[in-house]
Amino acid sequence: MEEAIELNETVGRELARLTPRDVLQRLQEGNSRFWMGLAERPEMSAMERRALIMQQTPKVVVLGCSDSRVPIEIVFDQGLGDIFAVRVAGNVLSPGTNGSIDYAVAHLKVKLVLVMGHEGCGAVKAAQLPDEKISKESPALRDLLMGMKHELCTSRRILDIRDQRARDREAVVTNVAAQMRRILELPHIQERVKEGTLLVVGAFYEITSGMVDFFEPEHVIPNLDKTPLSFADSKFTGQSPSTPGRRAVETPPPAKELKLEPSMMLPPTQAPADAYPAARRTSLHYNEPLKVLNRRSFEDNSNAPEPNE
Image 1: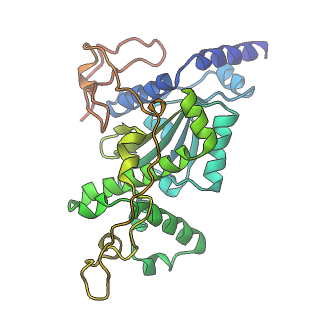
Image 2 (image 1 turned 90 degrees about the vertical axis):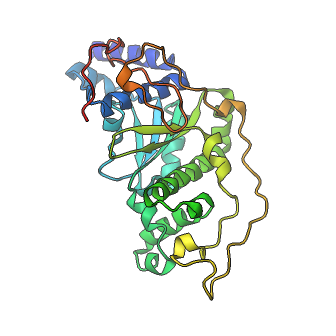
Image 3 (image 1 turned 90 degrees about the horizontal axis):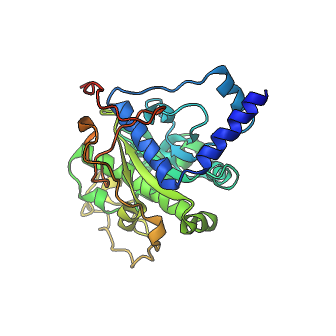
């Protein structure tokens, strides 16, 4: 038991030295291993599992969707005790999920809050249905979908996209941005962010490729309107705003935007020029290639095979 206690303390000290940026980089590296077919799926020895009973020391809390195709630890190639996962349909902030995030920030001292949506999210699609259809669901599901619909109505960009797949992605990103904004409006979160001890980041998981795109608050939150568009808009009713009986979309008054401090913004991802060639993928807002590292030795996988197609 003494060995387990000593191991737990050692791991705790090592994690305490990580910066929020280091924690984010670990997730990026883990996802790179996952989508390239190099996932290590880290498992623990009996001693390591025993050490976990002493305390948990995750450095990231992820607000993700309950969708069975989006297992958070697997997508980021993380192991037991690495991620404090909060999962709910549509990855929405509610009293329950908010309380879980507050616990992770205040008591577990996580250094990163990640809100992750995903390709083909059924909850986001359902939230775009006409009110009449949503009202037929159970009270709990109806309230969840209507809350999401309220958030989706804060983006005009969705209305302007014709390609269905691009529109679905924009709707998911809009929902993620709305949850990020709500999290960043919490005073205790703002305080930690300004101190530089916490980052709030958004992400989009592409099921078809396994890749995760990360984006900063200042890239997505300004696209939201404080005043939601009318639920009578064409995107959410399937009818044109000019259809008789439907009023046209009104321009909401200027919104008071959330002020993003410099400390809330992430620097570009850095990677050496000799980074693993197959990992040279440009994500949504990170324009530098990711460097794939071995989780245990943290050495370059320079001789690793090409990723599976």
